[in-house]
Length: 335
Length: 76
Image 1: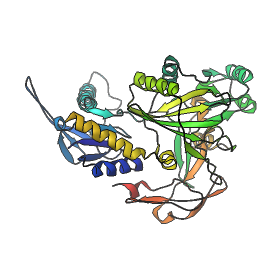
Image 2: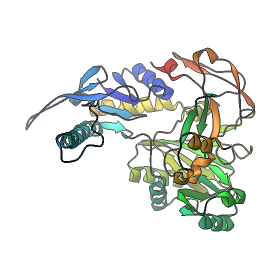
Image 3: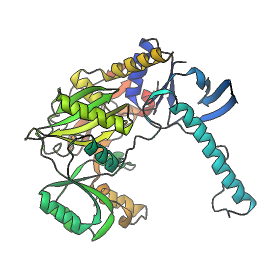
Image 4: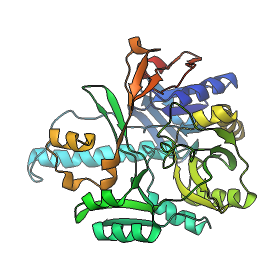
């Protein structure tokens, strides 16, 4: 086995990458992260011998023989070792002590498992696609990139002051975007970047849980940049022409979809992005930037597991093939 | 009523614990079943057509599209 591809069942980009890998002759195992579980079945460890045998779903693998792991989407999770309900147990009685024992036991198993996956040549990380936006903005400043003025606040008055200073502001999530399905009518709801008006602020309570606000950056075009191991592919999205997409192009105008074309970033910006990704320890990710009417490049955020195939199709980037090539190259170098 | 506030109310959760950005969550797509593939739907008063991925073939509509799909259809 050359490669384990970890992705959710409905990740159709992973399916395309899988097909390219097969085309390149890579022996790949697709691990369906939201369905399958991992179990450690056997470990041998001595000074001159190592053998880690894991059950991934219904298949057993010797991890020593797997040179490459691609964390595309979802996470590797362990099978539960106990079905017993230990909730509300006292820490001192038999059941409580057993619960504590199992908690640490499962933690040890998880650490062993993740150490094995993380020790491989890899793309991605074993996390559910989340990244802390404040930490990323800090890293972007250190990499020399320009960012929008940002506040994270619990106070209505601070938001009002921020709006007065910047004229136009937006809000977006601190971490992953919230989404849910409304079952009665079958609609899906997603959180996007949204404009915040004075009317909105007036309806806010005086204090509220920590919420992120940013200066709205005027744009000529929105840039969606895909980064993989120093290679950069940039799509320019003309999202300012529709009131639906001007704050977030994913609020699609289905009647008149945004124009999307390939775009060459200045070398200076590419260098800064490369430095940022290196500092964040990311081999790949989707980066959002804005080109302003003053020709300034403003960094917004990076998504380690962002969906990129739509823009890849529009721009003929063939990113699924590019990722498969990168994996194939790394496997050949590792063997 | 904002759908998030409605859902909070339905689930007996106080809005006071919710970061305000969540309240801007919008209706985006309609889930579809297998038999709905190819059909047209109204989302935000705009007619969209459901698409699906089947084997190696990407079935694209000629008009406006949504990215609705049934995950079961695309498991390899």
